[in-house]
Amino acid sequence: MDYSTLSPADLIRLCAEKNQSAWEEFVRRYQRPLALAISRVLRRWGEVSTILLDDLLQETYIALCAGNYRLLRQFIEKHPDSLDAMLRVVAANVTHDEMRARNSQKRGGDPTKTHAQPSLTEGVTSYDETTRIEREIQLDEIDRLLQRAPKPISSTRDREIFWLHFRSGMSAQSISELPFVQLTAKGVETSLYRTLEFIRKGFKITCD
Image (cartoon, rainbow, N blue to C red; front, side):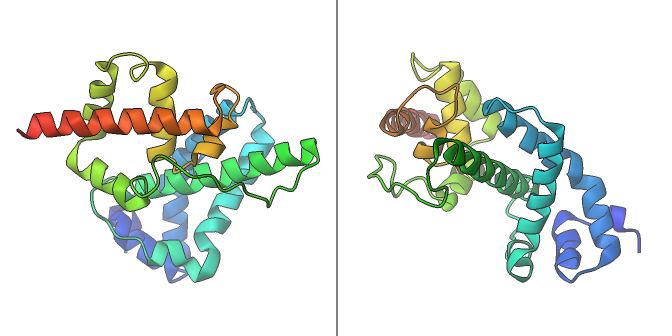
């Protein structure tokens, strides 16, 4: 079998079945994209360690294999980039979790403790909502729309906040902890709510 010709869905199905050749092909295809996703998150945290990047890459593979390959077995290919998007989210989440744990340990806190806060975007920012937005409007169209938006929606920071939330699945609290953001969790929620409302209005206009 020529594993290089397999579709993403077929490839990860074989990976979930512990097919060694399929895993070799998976690593060949996706190790660089995973490393890039991890590297982008590390840069946001002000971290450039290649040793840490390698460790997080291995942690990402472990996350993909966890629960008897649950993520791979439950994967549904909704569009050609579905697997790439899912892998980016997993890699980003693994990296953010590690950096939050490290920062918490530096401050003497409990890395397992989370702080629940009411969210302005609660109920409209689930993974299903993300895939719905991606399906209805191409990501480049969304970004072009945001670039044409009035300030502060079109600012680099607000657009980055939006993509961190909807592409990487980060919570408002997690985003607020990134060095470049310089907002509270409530400030991040306000930014997300404002941007989401602008996109919804823009989408309604294009559909009229």
